[in-house]
Amino acid sequence: MPDARVQSAIAHWAPRFVSNGVPLTDFEEVTAGVERWEDWCRAWCARAAVHEELGRRSLADGYRLSAGEHLTRAAVCYHFSKFVFVIDYEQMKAAHRKAVECRNLALPLLDPPGERVAIPYEGKQLYGNLRKPRGVAKPPVLVMCMGLDSTKEEMDVNEGVFLARGIATLTFDGPGQGEGEYDFAIRGDYEVAINAVLDYVGSRGDLDATRTGLWGVSLGGYYAPRAAAFEKRVKACIVLSGPFEWVEYFDKLPELTRNTFQVRSRSRTPGEARSRAATLTLKSVAKNITCPLFIVAGKQDGIVPWEEGERLAAAASGPVVRCFLEDGNHVANNRVYRYRSQSADWMARQLSVTPV
Image (tube, rainbow, N blue to C red; front, side, top):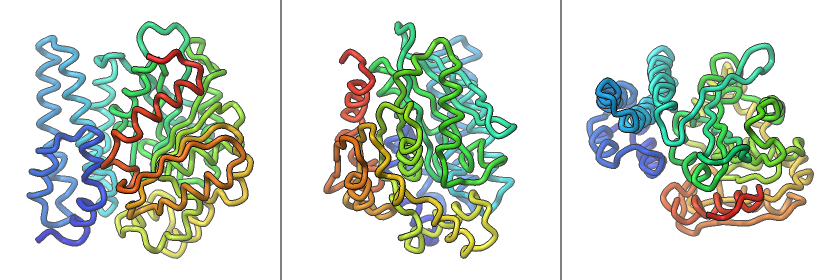
């Protein structure tokens, strides 16, 4: 029987893997062969390597679109090998390098293609993937905020629904996230990072910085509205299962999640991690959110209680669309058809994009 950590990963995140691009059979076969959490990263890297080889072979044969698809799939599998695997830092980091490498190789091969960008931030850089819809000279842009364990390499499917509606996507790793986790710790005042990203958007002549939205998933569902409370360049914000006050149920989070927060917040002890979790709060700032919000929450969420979404909806000062799904899990990944397209249509309206 798999150990408790493996069982927890499967129970909490199975729909997420599949809804974000991992083939169902891959998920079933890899997880069926993992008994110990210590073997998780290695097993997923082995499966990711299969997709990477297919991608490199397609690229060598001149099939660029197929290569991009295979390499994107490889990147997602490498990502899920490391996403909460903080027990072996070097193994995690090696898997992460492969995820970034495969996604970077895939970006120019995609339809529409993507571009790796570097965003100046506190004397260093944050890295992102920018994709622009075809046939739109100066599109609006959606800045996509990652969660505790998500990274830009996981976002291909989520990017696609906005690109199809004429919205550019800028998916980035912030402090404590993805490539940003090596130089910067998690910070509660995420508006500082978003300010840097929006400055970068404004520096690009090929994007319409006057039509900018935010999107945040899981802990990113805290980061995005937190930034919207301070950053008035944001025209609209989508919130997916974000916490209102992270510390209030921190002790009830899955062990893998608490351990990951401790590492990425650079806390020395669980107690210090809990203290830092208390700095991630919307309680005193949500009233300053005046832009429209689209809030998604699953009422069967075993990680972030859906009531956190209602707390945000009640506290915000702008218009709110509630999308609370009775049978939805965390991020409602088991019911993406109930909100993914709908939220993209909503964002298109907020950014004055003609419906398609």
